[in-house]
Amino acid sequence: MSSLNLSEDHFDYICDQLKTHLSGIGLEHYPFKIGWYNQMVSPKFRLPFDDNCIAFVIISTPDMFELAFIPYLRNYWLDNKSCSDPIDECMKYHFNLLKEKLSAFSVEVIHDFELFMPNRRPRVLVQTAAHVSGAAFYYKPDFISDSTDISHKLLGVCIHPLFGGWFAIRGVIVFKSLNNVSLKARQPIDVIPGIDSKKRLLLNFNYHWKDWSYRDVIPVLKKYSDLQIKYFSLKPCERKEFINYLIHLKN
Ligand code: B12
Image (cartoon, rainbow, N blue to C red; front, side, top):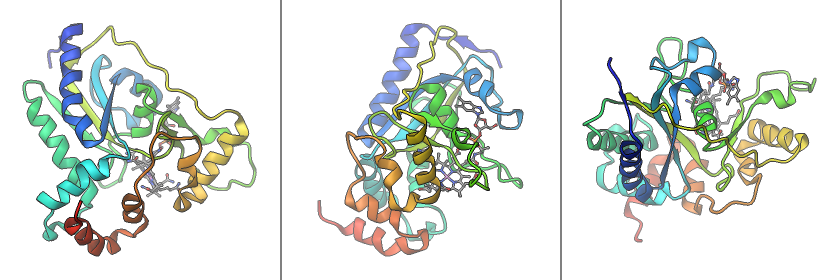
C-alpha cells in the first residue's frame, strides 16, 4: 500500500479529531510508530504494518464508566447480547464511531480482547504499546526474576503517572497509510522508586489484584467510582442484575 508522509498540520488535525471524540467519554490517545512496538516484541507478536506507520494507543480513565459505559447501557445494551462482555461491546461501539469519523483514512482498530484463533494469542500487546507511546510505564516481571519463590510466569503491569493502576488499555488505532517520520518518542515516566517497590507492585498485581491495592501504588488524580468498583468486583456471570440497576439508576 502506498503511504503518505504526514505534515505536522495533518498530524495535529488527526490528534484534534481523536481528542474531540474521546475526551468526552473518558478515553485518552497516545501516538507511537509501529516500528517502536515491533522492535520490542518477539516476531510472533509483531504488527503487520510499516515501521513508520502512525498508531495511537487508547486508554480508559476512571471517567469512562460514567461517561461512556452507563450511557451505552441505557441506549444500546440489549439483553440478547448477554454472551458478550458489555464493556467490550461499549468499546467496539465507540471505536467504530471513531473509524467512521476517520473514514477518509485507512484505519484499523485492534481491541485489547482480540485473539488469534486457534492459538488464542492476543492480536496486540497493549501494555507494550502503552509503554512505547509514553502513556504508562510497563513494569515487566524481569524485575523479580531473581526471586526463587516465584515458580510461574508473572504478568507485568502498566502504571499511569496520573491514574496509577486505575485505568485500562483498550486497544490501538493504526493509520495504515500514514507515516510520520518526524514523530519523537515520549519516554514513559517510571513512577515507582526503587526495586523493592517494583517487586511489591508486581506481587500485588499478580497475587492480590482482587483487593485493588496495586492500583493505589502511587497517589492518584482520580479512582474508579464505587459503582465502577462494584461492577468490576462482580463475576461476569453475576453482572446482569447490576446492569439493570445501572440502567434504571437516577442521576
Ligand atoms: C492474557 C491476559 C490475561 C491472562 C493472563 C495470562 C498470563 N498470566 O500470562 C488472565 C486471563 C489470567 C488475565 C488476568 C488479569 N488481567 Co489480563 N490480560 C491479558 C491480555 C489479553 C494479554 C496478555 C498477554 O498474554 N501477554 C503476552 C505476553 C507474552 O506479553 P508480555 O509478557 O508483555 O511480553 C512481551 C513484552 O515483554 C515485550 N517486550 C520485550 N522486551 C521489552 C522491553 C520493553 C521496554 C517493553 C515495553 C516491552 C518488551 O515482548 C514480549 C512479547 O514478545 C492483556 C491485554 C492485551 N491484549 O495485551 C490483558 C491485561 C494485561 N490484563 C489486565 C488486567 C487488569 C488483568 C486482571 C487484573 C483482571 C482484570 N481484567 O481486571 C487480571 C490479573 C491477573 C494476574 N495478575 O495474574 C490489564 C493490565 C492493565 C495494566 N495496568 O497493565 C490488561 C493490559 C488488559 C487491559 N485492557 O488493560 N489477563
